[in-house]
Length: 521
Image (cartoon, rainbow, N blue to C red; front, side, top):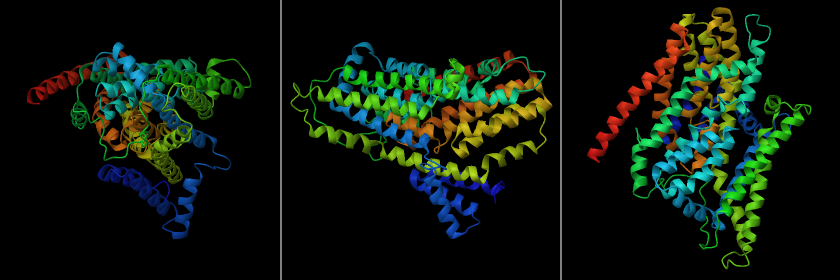
């Protein structure tokens, strides 16, 4: 049943179930079983084998799967850092210091958004690091964890996908090079093409404008309003729901915490990760010192593991150094801190492993290829291809939970179509694919970046998904209008103008809605 309409059933089942039941692991598990049943033509023995393989491949894929294992270890190390930063009082000290510098809720939100933009090297790294730094401050100013997760998610992948010096940029430039190779009409390199495509990524533009508007005005649309109202009363998240990254252990309170107890582990985590990315990229590029080549060949998971180890060890050492003057600091808390940190991340790790297993089976079923074939065989007008590719990439990323997998499939297909049919729309169409992939990823509860954004923020996964969707759909609608104008006019200026007009209209309407809701609150 591969490459048929049945291939889209497992992701639909998983996504519908998770939206209806809010039970993520159960929904992913049923999606995995349904995918295995379809893949093996409902053979009981074959289904069991494929389910086992789907989980095993996360750790062993023809050899040790270092990529996935290192991501899991990094998550656990981040949990340990969180535990010891709390044990040493670093989080409390940083929040108290920040309250003197960041004196308003608006400043706390804007700081989070700016951090999300600055930390653009990798979306995983962004989601988890920005959450660690921002959470003590946004908690103090009663910003809901759901809104923090939205800020993190909307400034991680959208920045990475247009930043050439990032893990995303390196991968995309590599794909572009294969698409453009041998094309006589092309007068630009893959890097130049990537840079030209950045202002054509209308979803990124719309998302960033909206996220800054929300941070500045505190506009709350849809389910986010309920979360912000609860946060204003001191309930930053629903305690009845599973919160990944939230420490269950109650640590002793004391007044010996210092800002350095939080900043030094995070700073070394960042520095260690960046240094490792540079070193692994340099080694994998045959020791050629070329910044683009280095980022194309960098080993992100291994770098995260190195940075995580450095940060975790530092956080433990800083706690041990307190033992002379801090009476609550005892050797027994070292073991308890490590265990508590690991336990805090187990929920996120399980969801990630289940999502990887479903993604593996969806890939075997050929869900993405089937969706792409449907569009190719539709013989649609050239002018609507950019917007159609945007929508298709969004559907693929939403269904498969992977933006990389979606643009990895669709970029070469879109390139082949546009080179033959309309070379003048090649770059806009490729940019539409990237934009759609990020949009679908933002809305998908089975996306690893969605999972990690909620983990970094300390938000329930489904609370993050349902509160972000209205903002993501709005940005997607604006982007679709931009791509439609681009296809009809072939003008970037007219397309950006259309995006700008749509943004102004939406933000004016939201401002009006916000003022009405304030009068009635």
